[in-house]
Each structure stands twice: as structure tokens, then as C-alpha cells.
Length: 318
Image 1 (cartoon, rainbow, N blue to C red):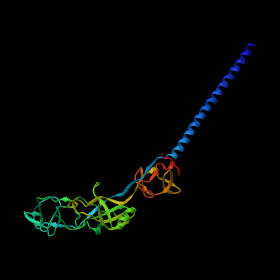
Image 2 (cartoon, rainbow, N blue to C red):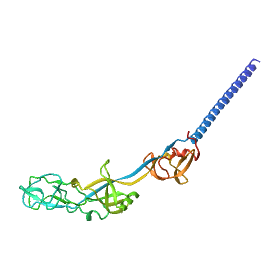
Image 3 (cartoon, one colour):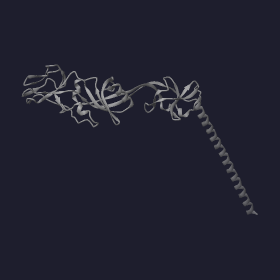
Image 4 (cartoon, rainbow, N blue to C red):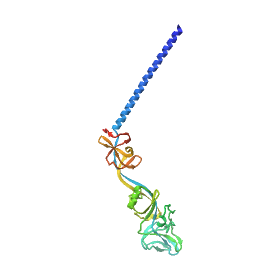
């Protein structure tokens, strides 16, 4: 009888333990379910709240200018000034400078060498004199010929009659430039108008360069320009670089997140009182965070900041 009672007690103990474990499992399952339900309800409420109370932003006025780098070469009319007789040559200045007609630009054994026309005189040569001309540089789409920096002709050396002692660039004349630029729609429009806005310094003032000729070369366009300046320092190199400002437009700026694509159309959710309405726009990305709108939004219009998270309809901003 003793062993039988013990077995019954052990079975009763296991049953009680199993029932206790089951109750705990059910209890914790209910707690977890309630917690999940509360979280889901909160998220649903939060999502609904955010849709009814979206962040908004006002469009701000903005001007947009496309800046293209220009790397080109300079062209000018020039002629060699030769030594009139044998002798030791000296110069009054080693730098390019403006000279008047009959002004002395050098001396041979103390006798002045004068020029017969006003212009810029430079006591330096690069070997391209007489070769660096439009008819050689413009045809075709090849790269520009190689050239080197001008070599200064130092005074105090004996030269023979006919040797070059410098070059004269007659004035007045236009300083011209040939360059390749990336083709853009706005650049092509500026070329058709006959001028380009150029800037030689980052914070400098822009000036207009007249377009003498242009030709498309694949993704590039080759331009022949008349520059609005001709300082004597230009003779120090035939290379030229500047920035071309094109595509000057006025519009508004909105954050990228305010722009959404719906049914193949680009637009924003415009806030009209307490209602949002999809409004189609035109424009393009201005930078990593902002979108430049050229049509559809005006300065001061209020749009939804995160358009992909809000539907059209009634909202509460306050």
C-alpha cells in the first residue's frame, strides 16, 4: 500500500505543476498580446496623428545659375620686332607693357629701337609667333596644339641684325578665345543670343563675352569668343580659364522631401487652409537637400515637408 500511495502523490504533484506552468504561459501570452495590441494601437494613432498634423515648410525665393568651367586658349594679332643691327640689346622693362607709336622698346648699343604703331610690347617669345592663328586652331575637333610659356629675352647679350628682340601686339584689337564647353540647353540658348556671361574670379563681377562662332562637337560645344578685356598681362600665356554663368532663372526652393511622384507627375502637397492638395510642378534638384521649382509654386506657398507620408485631404496644423 505504501508504494501505491507514493505513486499517486507523485502523479498529483506533476499534474499540479503542469497546470501551474500552463496558467503562467497563458498569463504571459495575454500580457504580451495586450502589449502588442497597445503598441499597434499607439502606432496607428501616431500614424493617423502625423497624417493629420504634418510638418510643413514655406517655399522661399531663389535664383539659380549654372556655372560651367571654361579652359581655352587666347588669340591675338602680333608681329616680331627684330634687331635693326648687330649689338648688345638692353630693355627698359622686362614685363609686357603698353607702348605708344615711336616709343623706344629696347636699345642696341645704346641706340633706341622704336615701334611704328601703338600696342603692347613683350620682350618674351614662345615660338608660336605667326603660327598661333584662328585658321590653324579652329578647324576640326582635335585638341589644341601644345604650347609653352613665353621665354624672357634678357638684356645685356649681343644679337645679330634680324634676330627677334620681342613682339608687338598692335592696339586697339579684340582679345579672342577658343574653348570647349559642356553642352547644356541653357548654354545653347545663350550662344543663340550671341553672348556668354563669364567670370574670371570666384567673387568677381561677371561680364559679357560675344560669341563669334560655335560648333557642336559631340557632348561638347566649341566656341570662339571676343573677350571684354585685353590687359597686357594676357601676353604672359596663351592659356585662359574662367567660369561661364548660364541658365539664370528665378524660382523657389523647397526641401527634396517635399517633392513626390504620383502617376508619373512630379509635384508637392500644397497646403490650402486645412486641406492638402497635390500640385504639379516643374524644376530640378538644386543640391543634395533642396529642389529648385520653376513652375507650380511661388514664394510663400506652404507645402508638406514629407510628402510621401501624407495623403491629400483634411489636416490640422494647430
